[in-house]
Length: 77
Image (cartoon, rainbow, N blue to C red; front, side, top):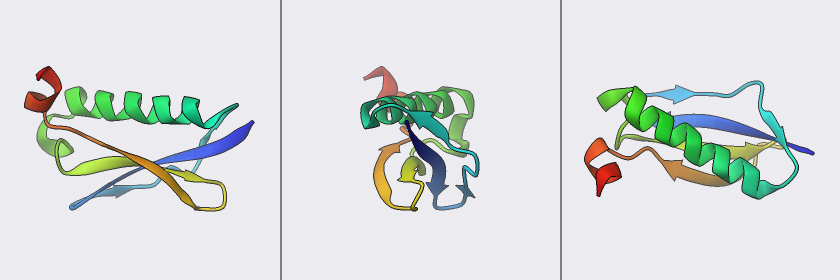
């Protein structure tokens, strides 16, 4: 199991994940990033929508991938 960290990074905000989560394969971390982005899209209104992304990094700090936090009108399309 490898540990992955999910940071929220945007123009006006940066929220660092100091705890991380362990997954057996990178695809599971990618799915978690999508789930977190969707949760922020619908749960936080305009605070993050269209302005930030969930960045996934390794224990070493390497950036692995990023999932944008879309605006609500882009979700329904």
